[in-house]
Length: 119
Image (cartoon, rainbow, N blue to C red; front, side, top):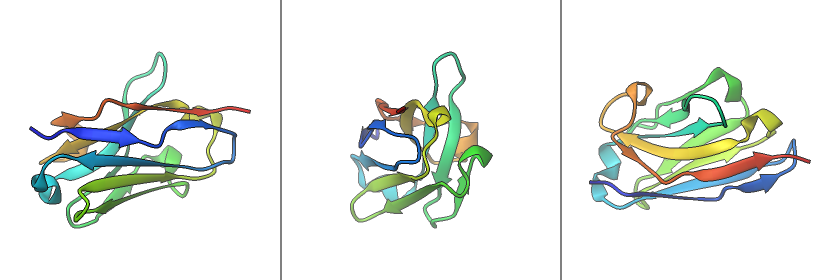
């Protein structure tokens, strides 16, 4: 079992920035695909960004050029830097991990952290 603990959510104005962090509990972190999903009220959970153990990244079209996912294997932590935030980015963001492609879902989930973009 891998436990994932997120931090860094909050309230930010449109155009602002936030950085989310997700710390994993086990050393197998280094072989996992890590990423972030989000879920807005009344909507399905969507994959926002993912990063493989080899640091290959992919992003949802809606966040390309604004969000950056990165990982520090020594710290067993993955980050999501979010810039130029928009109101439509408001959602609960979930850290996710899998041995496989995250597009097919996650094996492990964090508890979620709220991001609210509002003036």
